Every structure is written in structure tokens, then in C-alpha cells.
Length: 48
Image (cartoon, helix red, strand yellow):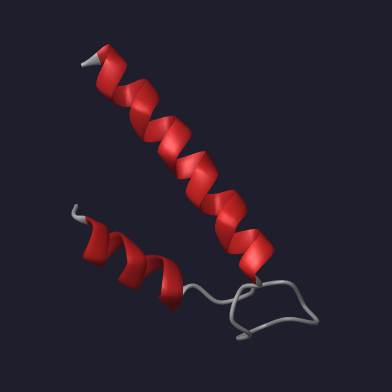
């Protein structure tokens, strides 16, 4: 996956909470998700 594909995926995510169904994610949620993915992929790369 390249950076553009990841950005497209992240931008396409929508809320699933009952009061937020279909809404774009907030910037805070997107930033938290990016950090989580970065940490996970870094962990995976270290493990091979």
C-alpha cells in the first residue's frame, strides 16, 4: 500500500456511531487512526 492509497482509504471512512452514521471522521479521529496504523505497521516491519 502506498501513501496515496492509504490517504484515499482514510478519507473514505465514515462514522458508524448511531448519531454519526455516514459522516466523515473528524480530524482528531483521523489523526488518531493514522498514529495507530503507523505504530502497527512499524511493529509488523520489525517482526518481518
